[in-house]
Length: 482
Image (cartoon, rainbow, N blue to C red; front, side):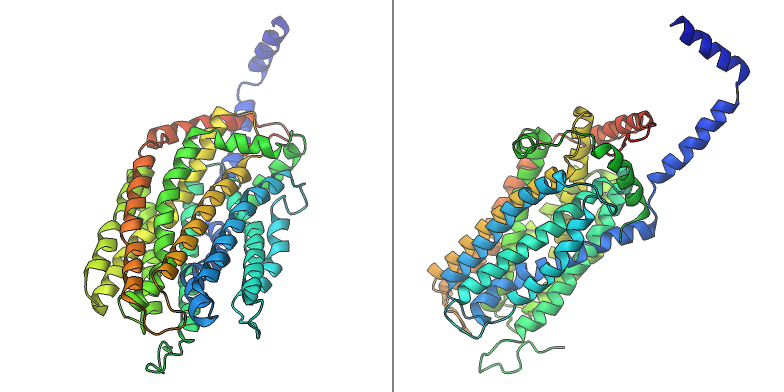
């Protein structure tokens, strides 16, 4: 201690100014590392577009495609939808675990997964929308390629979404980058809805309506953060799958967030999966169903920036209550009105506002949970992909169950494959699936989210603690992210 004190006095007496200036100079680049340019955010956001383009096409149109274009029995279609979604859900935690165990390469730990899975995802996606020239084995065809595509998409999306935690150390920068990403992803849903809607709609073969539906790289910030984690990541003890599972499932704020959004996401997925059939057979807008879906997505795209401002101004929990609840009166209205095309379009515009909130808020709040876990467990590393993959697992598995159940409900209601009109029981079933059931799921989800403990005060407290932890990372190999 005496030698240390003497050294301090000696340094203080000889160099009273220079060390201070040096410290300021070295702190500047470190602060700048957390800042993202608009170009950085756009480059990151563009990676989410393919996932949403294909996801929206499958979510909105795969059910009606299998029933009316591929001419499958509702029971077989329900098997494909359920097994495909269930398989997709199972692959998420598996890929998340494998990503967390991957070795670092010259382009990082996650980029090889993204680059290698992309060509296979493209091939299997096109084969899903191809009607094979045989009847026997058609169900197996769609089941195999649907599951293969979901696997390839998971290998792309899990590492891509986990990159959120690496692109910046600053919460505001990550929130802003997430908003850019959600903006691009909603634009992706617009493209998927528009393009696939015209293709599926153009396949209508109803003789009374011959003209139906024929209307006409890594960012600089992410590189810096990934380079910092390479040196330290190789020295850390890797989590086993059981440890990762316990790590995720035992963390209270994460469980409350996931279960709350599980119910609200189920509501919107149930609406998404049945809305095309509802517009076609319950409202009778056969010529306009794809355009109504397109209006919903366009409305959602335009309101993403507004929701980003709202959550910044009033907090994320308030944005959840207001944004998700906004859809409820319109879900009720759409089944109460008679077949009126103008009102249907107006309701679609209003519903798109809530869809935007449902897109943005879960992905904006998930990094806050990871930050909260980091504050409570500073010695645990390499867990980011696990939090993201298990979240997607629960959402996808539940959505697979809901789609399978809803398609089976149509079978029990007497759905006639390939028919231009359906029994009244089918219309009633579709009304139940797009209004009362989603409204009930939203109510349960919001009640659970009220118990979510990370409010704005706690979020800002975590931000300060993490910023105080960053100056400790001054030695080579010390990572402020992991």
